[in-house]
Length: 420
Image (cartoon, rainbow, N blue to C red):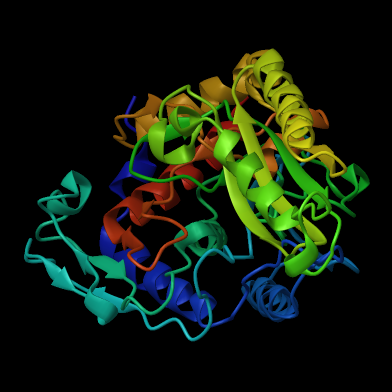
């Protein structure tokens, strides 16, 4: 079956999606790993308030902004569909702190000519190196100027959800059940929806829009841990240090050198997990290292945590009198098993893709989403592509045609959940 939703004119969605996306990326929402409060940065409040205003302007009567900047809008069901199962559409408001995110200067290219694109600072986008970019020839793309990230992760998802809601409200002939629009802070910090209560939701299934290229649908992700490793040394003047000094900074360096290079992010793909050293600092007396650990297998992630303890003991053996402490905590878990326990959630997603002409493929997320945590809490939440590429970097770009396809897929997904 080919849905009538497939026949929605691209131009009807394009202007709305581009204008919304450009508006959202002007709000500086980089999150901060070291801040315990939620949200971790004030800019996320700015976007939460903007989305609240927009949802109310669309005509939604029920919009909630919690004390921690979670935004939930209730899109009412079509008449007669009020008792159908509610579903949620979710995207996160923060952008990664891994690259600058303030004063984003996006460049909109309405018809990409297929050539190499020069960016500020000697950076470039080269179709010879990026087949996905080469495939956008003649199509519209949006890219960063090279001074900041773009923010498609995940403001493209926000724009697509808002665009779908706007279209559904303007076209009541597309009947549907209740829909919840959910926008969350601090996804990039890996906190896993702190301060969020399931009592806020009526949905029995959700879908995140937080993926990449056209057609990628995701039901599995890493198991994730974060670790802080603390090094305690002994200080004395270097001139009289023989047999006394225990250099904490050097201990940290030795620990870092023990991390397997073949199990790093830059050396792995597919289903291979990794150790990632994300920060290291210190002096003779104290030092610290921050790491993230990722593995698709539940036992594999525990093996990695145990390996850090073995590395710590090895460092202590090399530096008598020094002390190494590993503090590891879980961030999120692989969602595959719980999603597969609710097969209808994925089947409707596949049907929506097929009905709108999207050639989909299931692939693992080499990361996580807020859907990981929702799934763990009992609400199965697969992930949908948004069209972004090169996330967390100064060479990030976004396919507008992929955005349109994602928005159309969401409209069809909502329609399908409203069928008997």
